[in-house]
Length: 245
Image 1 (tube, helix red, strand yellow):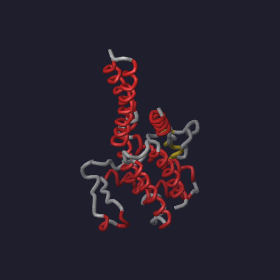
Image 2 (image 1 turned 90 degrees about the horizontal axis):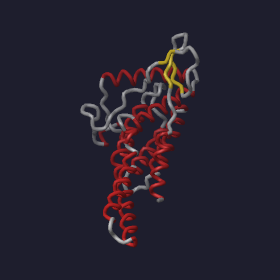
Image 3 (image 1 turned 30 degrees about the horizontal axis):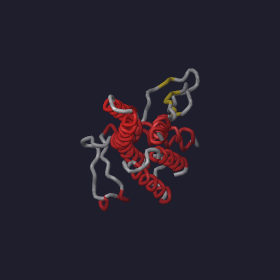
């Protein structure tokens, strides 16, 4: 029961992310905010840059750690991705020059939300619940005709097996893809923050620590609620670095 409650909590927490609004005011200026635009504003399509997808041909080119600057993964962007990231860099530079902290945080939230739930990942939290349901039904079917004293342990055993299998599915089909996408895209964001310079060493170390902790909690041997917690910590660290790079 504790495992099932944990899965339910993490599924609910994982999807409660702030929405980003992209709009243009009467003066023709574009804005990205986490609050609805004022009346009369022109609503635009969401502008997050094309994220780097793991496993997509031509987008990710792994290199040896010793051959990459600072030990970072080497990411190859398509021309459309390069253009989108550069546009985002310019947008953040303008917001930074105006002291618009709200926009800096909203862009960070929007990108993290897309990494977590884009490309169909939003449907993956249902897998552990389906696993528990199917294994429970199988245990109930096998227990038909048995004595009550034998039915309860059999059904209970299948439910525990369903929890274990559901946890494995959750890590393989949700946590691991989310971890890869977050690290790849947030490392790109580090170079497109609109500052025109590289991050301070202490900021870079902070983010690397959070990436490593996130990778560790995506392991199937970790408790299922640890990954959402590390995502929350990474989000706050990234927003802090974004505002004060």
